[in-house]
Image (cartoon, rainbow, N blue to C red; front, side, top):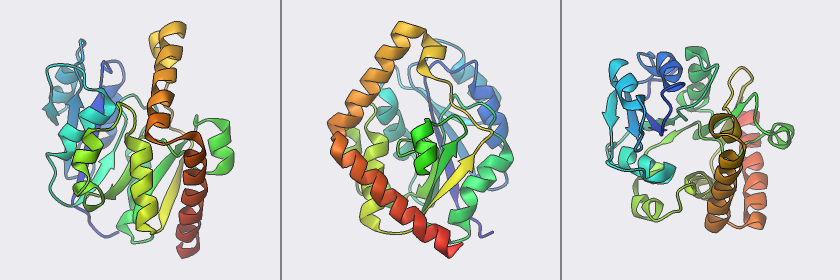
Length: 232
């Protein structure tokens, strides 16, 4: 497996209960050169747990939303490749991280996306989760677009990134993660707050890219994933 200069970015907001397990899987991973946690205005021990794990932490003074937190991290990277991880994953292992990195490191794909075991059934049936937060990609793909990303809604990052991947017209890999899950917002915040948070996320996504355009993205990403399957 070809070595990559790989920086892992983990945006996190009030994830003290879960981020430790994520960091145990990625901190010290032989294929990851640097881990950077962006503690997005947490009011719990998220930042302290990350520092105790020996990783770099950036802590803005207030909550910026996922896109804003990622921009802070992206501005700390100048080259190489990125590993993007959500902070609330359960079941994450070093082997799962290796599997996500492998298609890019081996040259089979320009980028890779996870397909978690608890991804919505529709996404698993289609074979792509177009808004997954776990990806490996070249930093150069984003480097010229940071100002555009900074202007996105709080949860507009993934669909904007999909647009860049599709425009690049290079193979992408969809990596099954059957043992990895992301807890629902309802389970973390309660029913009413969780539903409200899900609605706000989808509103941001559709402000960035309308529903019909999202469908076209999914079709295009399946086509690019097919190229990676053929190369494998």
